[in-house]
Length: 272
Image (cartoon, rainbow, N blue to C red; front, side, top):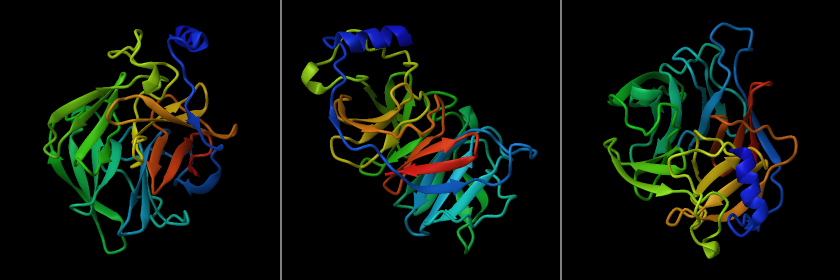
């Protein structure tokens, strides 16, 4: 698939990937997750990061097990949660619901959606199940929130699926990978297949008009922003050479910062 995709880019007629570019992102913050890889139930892959604007805290969690770590950090990246703070459910996506002022999450496969109950210090003490069963397009899909429509967005193959607050699927949008709107939709966009060059579990929501959706191009080491209405590419945001890019999880957007998880060093690195 990768070879075919590169060939399409080189021909330019089919996949013209030029779009508005910005300066390369710079590292601005780190969130060092608890435990080491030698510890029992330490986790490997970072699921996501979310910002709680009322608590003024970041929440980051590992994917893979209910007992994997969850970290709570202040706005400067200092960890506030203890070493034994855990996810409590095999988590994939985290998002802040501004109407309820709660951190909400989706779990692996049919684990459903839930909210975290926070204590006076903003630390999770328990969770409350919102929707039991599978309310996402794929078992590994990482949910992110679109505040204007009050919908949760999920990437599956080459399509972004949109679910309402009841956990019901409402709409979908095919992503025209690497294509600007001026080029028009092209043959070869695989609606039911994921491209190897992109992180295939995660879509981010930026809140930027015409650049609402973001995807991680792991081959080119860049973040690509797409229009929520058309699914076309509108902006390319280059990452520094030192950035680590993974094909699953390990990618997020929170508090205006792009986040990548450094698996080897067990830390979220924020770029802006």
